[in-house]
Image (cartoon, rainbow, N blue to C red):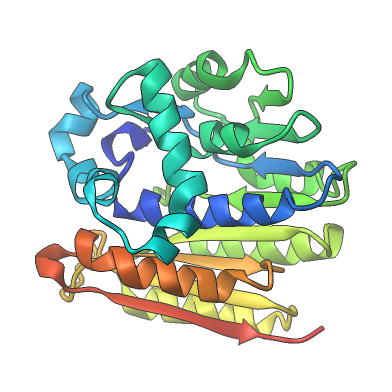
Length: 283
């Protein structure tokens, strides 16, 4: 694959995804027991928003930069503090325009007892990932196909934690792979939080994906989506979605509060939509 997330780091989709991940990890940290994070498509782990790739698209300006600069109401600011605090702390040590990918964010929020497994098959991206997080004794970086990692590394020894599947969506059939991976994860890690990220470009494809997930009949499956634009084109990202299996019981309301507040900052022309709903509920 030729995908480089550096072009898109810190954009509105990243903000939505990472704010959600931060809330999940904050919830897991309420118990002293260790948890494990498995990131199947980890990327480079750390990004320079002043670099050539990020500056070429400028996507972070409508994402993390607007959120950091905003005067957020107190309840929203409190909910976002784990995420935004991690970004600010990173910038104090690594540079004013640095941005953490999911691996760096997870490590920033993790505790000494927690463990992290990051898979990245692309050689150049993996080298950057090793440089960004490989020095941390809690972390292991693997050169492994992220789709195979789902079956290979579940259940984790800790028996609690997060599986994040965030593929690049460069190949056909990625939505089908997400559905299959979710079913495998539910079978092998019934108590774990599973997060599936997907782009919103083609509504028919996304609607079919949600129906396929619902047909699995898995309990406690949450849909979180935001739109950044009213007009959708298959060549342009117009929204971002997450399917979350076994989310913390507080997450739905927390994400509704967060996204309702920040999406107008990020949406084109100030227009956007937030959708937080259950595909399935109950035990």
